[in-house]
Amino acid sequence: MAAEVLEAMRLDKWLWAARFYKTRALAVDEINLGRVRVNGQPVKPARDVKPGDRLSIRQGVLEREVDVLKLSSMRGPAPIAQTLYVETESSRLKREAVAEARRLAPEPAATLSHGRPTKQDRRRLADWNRWSAEHPHDPE
Image (cartoon, rainbow, N blue to C red; front, side, top):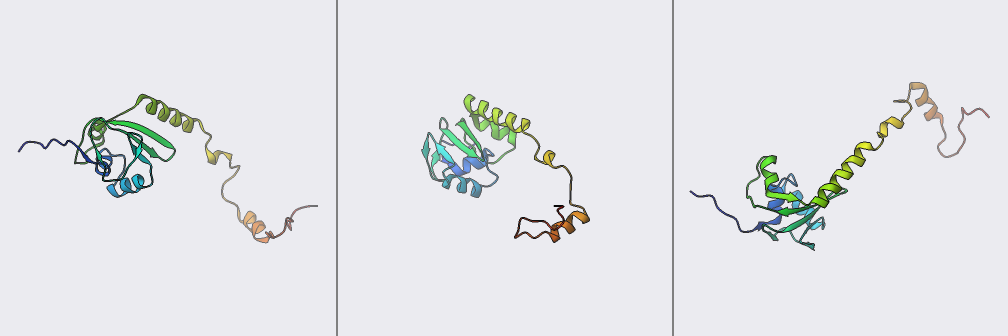
């Protein structure tokens, strides 16, 4: 039996097969929230996507632009899924800049001067009257 050649397929199914989302249900939710566009237009999950279409996909703070190269009705391993699309150069540069900024950002835990409160610290916190600015153990 020869492999079936697809001319077009549902957007949500393609996003799932290309491994942008873990489940089709997540893909449908993101499309309905307007986080996925085809050729600059807001779309619905059942919209057909075909090779040559340009998708804008927002995932968190990151916006990716990809061109659809192939269609696949099966979800395969990541290296095969990456052959279904090519990311635009501007999108790749933006994604790398965001990754670099995240790498260079200070570690939030590094600002802590110490870890868990000690038993003594917890007692001081329990004695503190949160409804007033004064603390019972503050020297005046």
